[in-house]
Image 1 (cartoon, rainbow, N blue to C red):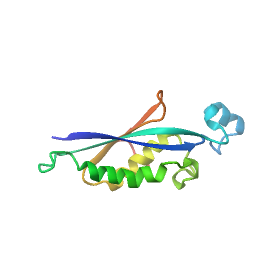
Image 2: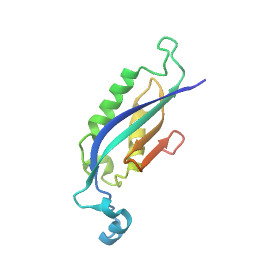
Image 3: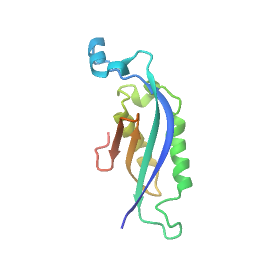
Image 4: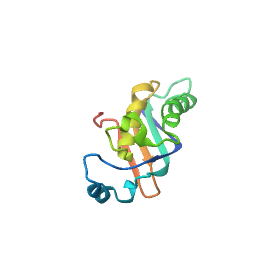
Length: 139
């Protein structure tokens, strides 16, 4: 039997949605105000879902302090108050929140071992949220 735990984290970052493969006109058409040359920021809320067997000693899927430390080290410290466009993982990939979800999922899944990272959900605004989950093809 598998149990799941979802924990939420917050960070703020900026980005500009822009593709070098598009003309200036096409970028404006596709990304609209999100193509602002100066970028724009978001207060992201990231939900990390992990799953696994309930540890008999802990009574939980994983130690929350271990999860918090790992997410803080791998995600919050990396992305908080950063311009996503300047980070190596977004040099050739448009830093949409879909792509940010994939990147965060891959970073956490490859390094957090006490439980399996099964899903990432990011709220970018009150109107936009994005999910990436286990079973999706990793890039």
